[in-house]
Length: 269
Ligand code: DGL
Image (cartoon, rainbow, N blue to C red; front, side, top):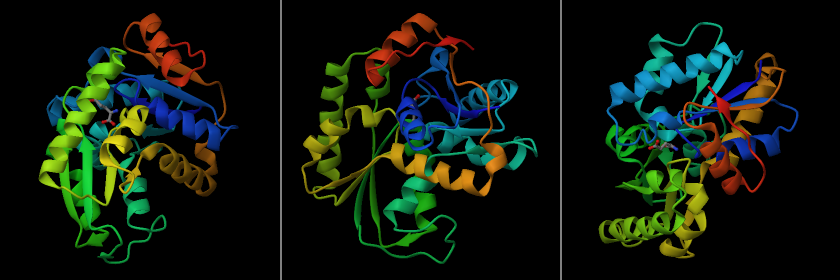
């Protein structure tokens, strides 16, 4: 049994990489639902069904704890899964809360009433489905007051990354940042609310300007997972690490190797 990490495609590798660095002794099984990526243009019902199928596959490999390293699945499916689908002896966690806790300067599990925080104008970059869910604004409202959020649905960016077309991905990021700045000229923080986007973090930072603090999830989620595992040591598991995909393993391995700059070999899920 290992810890499962799930994404629609390659974006969750940014979370896996940070988790492996933070927790070198923990085995991880990564599952990319490449055959159905991108999720960000799908309906909430579709995302729910696909996410449940993928997480079931990770349970079958022996994972008791699965991290949805996908904001789109976390936004559109996680709450429904936790309320009515996840078996008693399993856990499924998302990637939103660690990010919002960091932005609102809260410790894990601090459920005190919402309060004023330093950041006032936040730019949220995410997939169309994540933006439509308003899950980020909902989670933020539990913790902070007086924060103005402007969301930009970044159509096309995930497809370009999955296709390995980083020139197109960069051009799209710059045009999405421009569109955001027309709505909110001076954000003080930006949230990269899709696990694919850290692969273009420098481009976001450059387009936004150096005064904007860019929050990205990988290290925050890894830190929060480490904290969770100290409280639930039985969930850390043992066994071998593995990479599974519902797509073409050769193609996905090539892209993953290019992104992480080390050899990654996917097998058929
Ligand atoms: N990396 C994902 C996310 O964090 C999924 C993007 C997609 O499949 O559209 O939202």
